[in-house]
Every structure is written in C-alpha cells, then in structure tokens.
Length: 313
Image 1 (cartoon, rainbow, N blue to C red):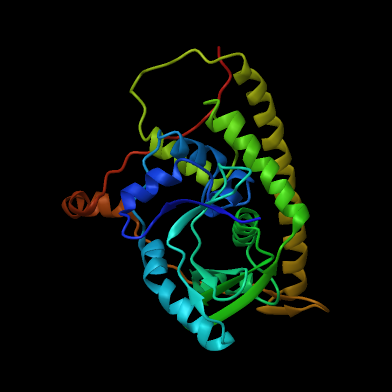
Image 2 (image 1 turned 120 degrees about the horizontal axis):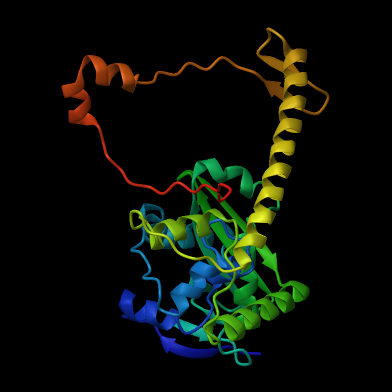
C-alpha cells in the first residue's frame, strides 16, 4: 500500500495548512479521538474540524518544538547513521481518505519514518526504558496506517540535554482499532455534525472555560430531563470519590505513624518521605485592613465561574 499525496506543503503558509488539516484526521488528532491525550479531548477535535473553534497560535512549547525539530532530526542521523529527508506533503490513506499524515521526516532508502519531539525534563520518566508516551505511540501507529510502513522512529530531546530515540514496530491490531475509532468519529460526528459527549479530561474542562468564560448575571435556563440523570450520577460519583479519599487518607496516616519523627521511611520496595516544607503566604485580610491603599494597588480582579448544585425548593 502507498499513501496518496493530498497536497504539497512546500512554501505553504500556516493558515492554509490549518485549512487542509480540517479536512481529515491527523496524527496529533488520533490520540485525542481515542481519549488518550491529556492535551486534547474528542470534543476539541470535533470543534476544530467543523470550524467552530479557532486554533490558537502555537504556545512556547510548540514554538520551540518546531524550532528544534531540525536539530533533533540531525542528531538522530548523527547517532544512528541513518539519513533523513523531509516529505513536504500531506499524505492521505488510499482507502480511508479522512486519515491524513504530515510527517516530520522519512528515512532515506527505507519504508520508515521519523517523528521528532521535545519534552520537559519533568516528563523524563515517561521516556525511560522501552516506554513511549501513549499519545505519541498512537501518533506513530496512525502514520504507519496512512503510509503502509512497517516501523517508525521517534526521537526526543528531553529537558534540552537528554537525547532519546526508539523504534516503534507496526501493530496491526492497534491500527485496526484506530481505523475503526477514526472512521466512527469522522462519519458519525464530524460529517453528521453530532458532537461527541464531553468527557472529564482537563482538555474538556479548559474548553468549556474558553467557550463560556462568563455567565450572564441573574440569568437562568430550563435544563432537559437528561440533567436529572446526570445529577444522580454526579451524587454517586461524589460519594465514591469521598469514600476513596477517606481510604487514601487512612492508609497515608498509618504510614505516617510508622515514620514518626523521621523524614524518610524505607520499605522493601519503596521509599516514603514525610518532609518539612516551609511556605510563605501574604495575609491578604490583614494587608487590606492595615494597608488598604497598597492592597487596592496590587489587587488583581479576575472573573471565573463556580459550579455548584443544590436542591430546588
């Protein structure tokens, strides 16, 4: 199988590239659609593809990821002896045209690709051993699905000073699942104009804040009957969460009692710490009382929305 070339990206500007991306599912969308991305939820992808959500300009992390992509690719070649080349095109699956791929690099003389990444030092443990973060594993499998390739390299610069590269083999079972998930999403949501159900991910929470940042004061609306079912589920989930929190606190307290006045406890397979931590906070109430002019000068007013539920009278 060989991928089709949908369009050349040579000298293409960002806005045109974003428009092309709206016409299908790319590698960075795949994990989000499968519910395996911490950065995007299925609803976010749906709104982007249907033109209801403007894509933000790249943040600092994305900006430096783009800047350092070429350096990561060169270092990969230096360490492996493999030559790489750009593929300035959006590739398209020949059977499932909604599956697109805008790959970082291809290995010269081989049916193999390369994905280049940068990551914070705080994420180093996610790359230890043979592990590849799930969203990037899904991304590479998506690229293999589109291109028909049997393997894909991923290279990452972690914390600006640790270089890691790993080879990912094609997983036919996973690719088959991905195709089903992406086909369902594209046909039953994007084309049908039916948004997927909001999930509990941080991405969905941030999306709601972005779409509905403030409420109209003193306004109200009648909710559908579905709201009552959701409220029952919410009560049950909260009771389960409270019970779980109490169980966690009980176990932690028993371990704290074992440690006592020591800062560190050594178990057969774990190291437990209960350390002293100093913190300094401004007493805003006292500051407002004793120095109201200074308080007003530096007080920052912000608006957010507080969600609460109470029994109607």
